[in-house]
Length: 119
Image (cartoon, rainbow, N blue to C red):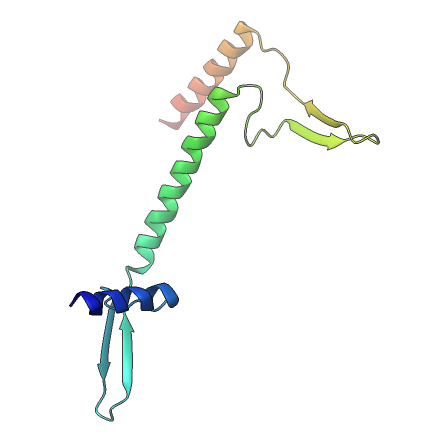
């Protein structure tokens, strides 16, 4: 029994895409004696769920990075990088300027009026 398991493990190491005793794999023979293999997957829903989880994890990592390095934001649209003729790295940050308290309040009031208009 142990020898059989050892041989299976060696086979799986040599052929990683063709696992022996894979739970999602069924092997059989048809009426003509032809060997067939049926793989049962989890479908696209599981793939989509995994992809969504990876996107969420990426967003979390970006947020943590931006918190730790506030002057070096990941996915910062207002940042341009390049090299000059001497090979010196340069960065140009394009901002919207300082926004005064009254301008922010006016912007929020306009947004509130827009939301009220939707109801």
